[in-house]
Image 1 (cartoon, rainbow, N blue to C red):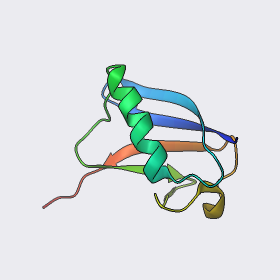
Image 2: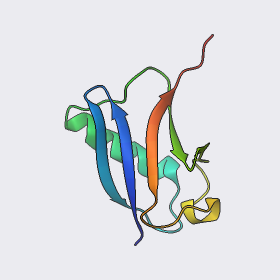
Image 3: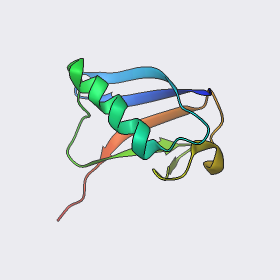
Amino acid sequence: MPKYQIYFDTIRGESKYNVDIDEDEVLDNVLDEILHDLRERGDVLQGDGSPQVVWNGRSLDFVVPLPQQGVRPNDVLRVSTVSING
């Protein structure tokens, strides 16, 4: 199972996790579980809005597996929030 380094921008600062994600899993399924674990540890994402995952300067699609988006094992991903001004 490929392992990825994911940094989360939380209210306490940056939190790093090494996460195993199957090649056919999508972020939509995996991210909810990781964010739940973060909340249980007392960490929440900084800011209001929807989470976004950025790799190599671009936002990733939550419903396409990482390898299909060009992401390789051990690549670094960053999770933050996107605010939508209304």
